[in-house]
Image (cartoon, rainbow, N blue to C red; front, side, top):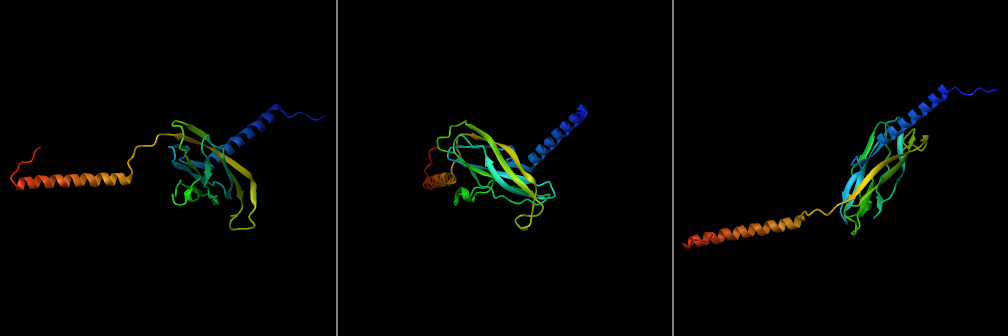
Length: 206
């Protein structure tokens, strides 16, 4: 008759499994983060914003991202602008969000990009998650055709927070230049008028 495993043995196995899960969760949190690190950004109607990324490879293998997804937003859409870099052992790949206007979102750099619709309600707070799936290899899969996977794919999750705010009333550069030119012209005309009246012996009104 088979003996039942001792309760202490079962408890030890459960404890070890829980510890392994906790360590795996911590490693995932360290591997993948957004830029900004808290994932929180603000956006105004018709404005385009985005997130960058940081991926740390803390192993002796090569890390290859193989999938990127998101939980979606209530209004508008998130565009994938990720370049799927291979991260060498002990190295970090990072890219701050950068928008290139001439080429649209296809030429932007970073993780995800978002363009707010014109009717975006001010104060709307859209939260969700980004999911990055990656696979480890024993060699650089971009350079070595014989590179073999190490272990199973891993998915890391980070949160994002997208809050709608009013457009800031900051003058356009062209408007600032025009205003400055008008002010300079007015002051120059005022000095010329005062100098002319003094030359003719007339006291200017103040």
